[in-house]
Image 1 (cartoon, helix red, strand yellow):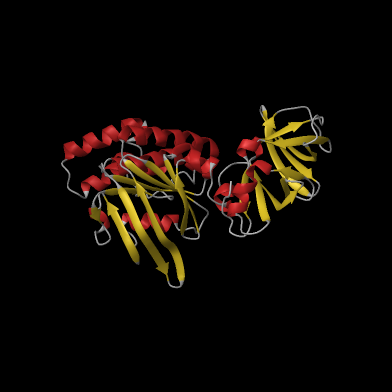
Image 2 (spheres, rainbow, N blue to C red):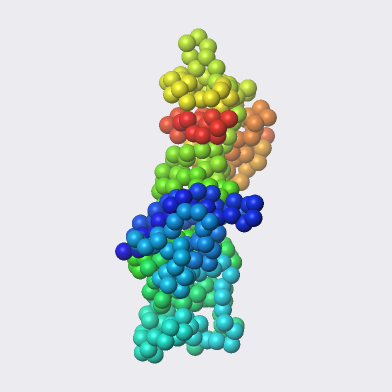
Length: 362
C-alpha cells in the first residue's frame, strides 16, 4: 500500500505564499495529476512530498507515516524531473543502475532490475549506448528506468514530457499510462498541460495561486467544474464565457446577453437561490453548440463566421454574435468566412456562474 495524504499544507518563500492550506489524498495505485498554470504551486508541492522542501504548516503522510521530518532518501519515492539528469560519459545501463550502485545492491540484483526495466520500457538495445548518443525520447526512457529500478512506493514526475516534440509527447503519454497500470505504483504527475491531465489521470488536482480549486476525476472536472477558473482551464478549445444579466419578464426568466435573450425559466429558482447579484456568466463549451445554415426556429441565435480552422473531419468556427466572440467545434461543413449562421446551445450542458464570486451555480 502507498497512500499519499496532505493535510493543510502551506509553504512560504518570504512574503510569497507558494502553497496555501492544501489538502488531498492520493489512494494506493492511483495516477494523480496536479494541474495548473506556471507558478500555481504544483512543483513546490511535489518537492515537499519528495522531501526537497519542508512545509511551513501542515502534514504530509506516506501510508500512515508523517514524513515532514523524514529525509528524502528514506521516503521510498522516485522522482523524474522536467530536465533529464544524465551523468556524462556513462552508458545507459550505468545511468539506470546508478541509484542501486550507491546503495550497494548486489551486482546480480542490479543486472536483473536494469534488464527488467529496460525491457518494460523497450530500451534493452540501448543499454550499451553512451548518453551522448541518445535521443530526447530515449533519455526520457532511461530516466524513467532509473526511477523504476528503485522499486519505490511512490513515483513523482515533474513535467517529464515538456522537452519532447508533439508527436513523441502523444506516444509517451500512452506509454506512461500503460506503464503505471502495469507497475501498480502510486504516481503523482505535475503538468500545466490539461490534455495530459485529462488523458492520463485517475484524479486531477486543479491548482491556482497556491490553492486547490477542485480535486476529482477528469470526467467530473470537465462536466461539472466548481468555478470559472476550472471551467476555463480545462478543455480545448476553451469554454465560451458570455456576460449576462438575470431578468424576469412576463413570468419567465432570461439571461440577457445584450445581443440575445436566453430563456432559463426552468432554472430560475436554482439561480435565484445562489446568485449574489443579477450579474451572471453563461458558459458553453464549443462542442456543445450546434450550427445551422438556416434559421428554422425562433430561439436560434444569429452569428457571423470570422475565422475557420478545419482539422480533418472537425471544424473550429470563430463566430461573432454582435460584438461577442463565440467558438464552436463542429463537424466539417461547407461554409465561408463572413457568412451568417444560426446557433443553439445544448441546454443539458450549459453552465451558469456568479460573476462576483466566480462560483458555479449550474
